[in-house]
Image (tube, one colour):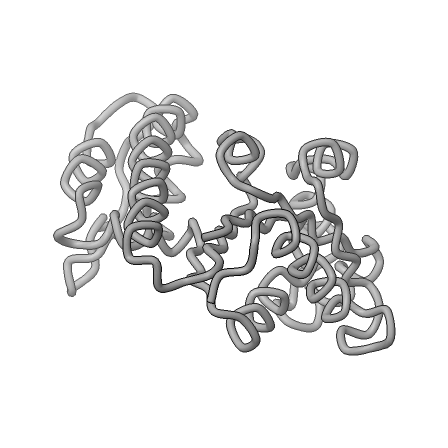
Length: 217
């Protein structure tokens, strides 16, 4: 099984790449955000520790609305509000969540290797580089897209303002860092299905990996 990390800036079209891979190749796709949501849901290993942490009272983390929704899930807007007012709380939550998510991902890779059913394991995350996945995955893909096109997409699909888009992009990893840590760049600026669009580049990248690691039937 060949393992691939897919990363890139907001609005670059990572989801479009993942849909294409899922449709055309025998792969398991895991999105780190979904892994975190599963672990943070009622019954997940992070649920009770997160609730306890978020309900602690500190000078910064004062009066807020209810933490839990009617179905028992953590209210993510309320959680964000408490974190925003307490930087130390954010640090403590990251120290709790990131190791648990990383272990979950590694365990899932291990399970898929044992099952032998998939040719590819695709891991998507905006924090692949920060979490050191370039050291354990067979290939790292940087989904590149020109900033002007990314901004246009974010305005159309999410209704983001120019100010919000600039704020998000400034907080993300630079293009230089992405290119330094990734062995493959997929340019998703042009028409996806065009002659040199992302679909063609994905097929070429997969072919190179099959040649390098050997195709699995």
